[in-house]
Structure formats: structure tokens, C-alpha cells
Image (cartoon, rainbow, N blue to C red):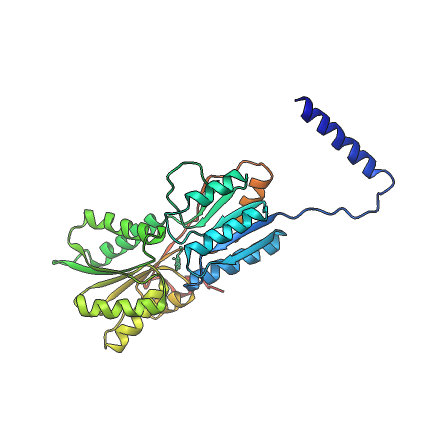
Length: 320
Ligand code: GYE
């Protein structure tokens, strides 16, 4: 107490004395320094996410140190470590996979730097290794995809066969989107997951996966792609093989980025569960609250919608 009182008194003297006779000196406000580790640039969603975070930081007057880890967890850990060494005010990152973060988060904690998880979630051995999460509810997204399938194909007498092109192995969106679908299938046993393969959220790999599906499970009714990019890759392969996407094989994807919405308008994709990358403003608000010691939500889920090929085309969102 005593020491605090002395410091407060000295600070007061300093303020008073520095104020005397220097009224026209410019006041230099310290900007918040914010380190953000982006996981890569594998998809349209990711590009939108990076652009939105850069825009929002600039508009909020926050000094952003942005690092792109090029799809590599080790690079993300290196970036976070350099943010710690630079003594940034807040760290945030979009974790490529769920596991393997404990050590670096302990380093951040020891340095007293708050850490925000953006977009994807993680699993840690210990509790309390990060400060807040802001992103999507991937399990909910998987459930929405399943519900659409049941709504559209529930009338069928026989089995409904689904193939899945999932996202990056061990990433929280791939896990949640798969588990959400399985939850719906448990209550609707005529829906079977005939084939599942990872396309790493990339268009090129979506193509390769669709080639595999056509070899291993050509009689599927529905393709479920964990993002638009992989659905677009799969559509290319279907068209080359003389299959009408959205008709011969129904397609459900996630994200609702520009090319996905275009394909929905053309009825090549039948349903898209929205996943919004436009969380920059909410993220900056969180950064301000944490730095200023104001109350903040530990978990923020972004509200999302479901679009289908039966929606009025003019009601669909326009993406930058
Ligand atoms: O759906 C996909 C991206 O983590 C929510 O990652 C994100 C996912 C998104 O590559 O397109």
C-alpha cells in the first residue's frame, strides 16, 4: 500500500510539473501494439479474414504486427514467441490445429500478455492459458448442414449416401463440422457417411478428393464440403466427369464466400452454412476492453445464417 501511495504521489507531482508552462506541447498517445498470427492463406475465407483484421486495426488506431504462418504450426509458435519478446500489449492467433499450444501459451502467461483465440479453438492440458475466444460455433454449422440434408432428402425410402471432404485434420472447424453432422445422422439412421477424406480447406485438394470419391463411392447422393473452396474444386471434377453438380449430386458447403455464393446462385451448390470471417471490429473492441481492464466476454460466437438454392437471389449477401 505504502509503495503504491508513494508511486501515485510521484506520478501526481510529475503530471503537475510537466503540465506547468508546457500547455502547447503535443500529447503523444501510446498506441496499443497487437500481435496477430494468421495461420496461412489456404482459402477465400482466410484472405477475407486477414483483410478484415488489417482494416479493423487500422481504423481503430491499433498498431498491428501481422504474421502469416503459411499453414505451419511451428511458424505460428515462432511468431507468438517473437510477439512476447517484443512485449506487445495483446497477442491473438488463429490456431491451425487444436493441440500443441500449451508451452507457448505458458510463456505468454509468464510474460503477462493476454492471448485471444480468433476463429479456431484449441485444447490445452491446463485451464486458463488464454484470455478469450472469438469465432464461430463449428458444431452448430455441422448440425445445420445435416438438418438441410434431412429436410431435402428425408422423404427418400432407401439409404441416403453422403461423402465428406473435411478441412484440415485436427483443426477445430473440421472436427466440429464433422461431429455436428454425425449428431444429426444419429437421429436419422438412413443417412450414412459413405466416404470421408480431408481436403485441407484448399480448392486444389478439393479436386483431388473428388477424384478419389468418384473412384471409391461414385453412387453418393450428397457431397458435404467443409468449405466453399473445396466444393468449387469438387464441382470442377464433377463437370469434367459429366456429372451435374447440385442435381446429380447435391452439394452442401460452409463459409458463403464469393465463389460459393456464385455457385449457389447457379444452383451448383444447394446449401451453404455461413461462417463469417468479418470479425475484425469485434476483435478490436475486445482488445480495447482487455487493455483498459474493462469487463469482456470470455467467449464470443458470431451469429451466422444458412443459405439455400431456394432463397431469393437478391437476398443473398454481397461479398467484397
Ligand atoms: O471455414 C475455411 C478456412 O477456420 C473457419 O478455415 C475457418 C475455416 C474456413 O480455411 O474456409
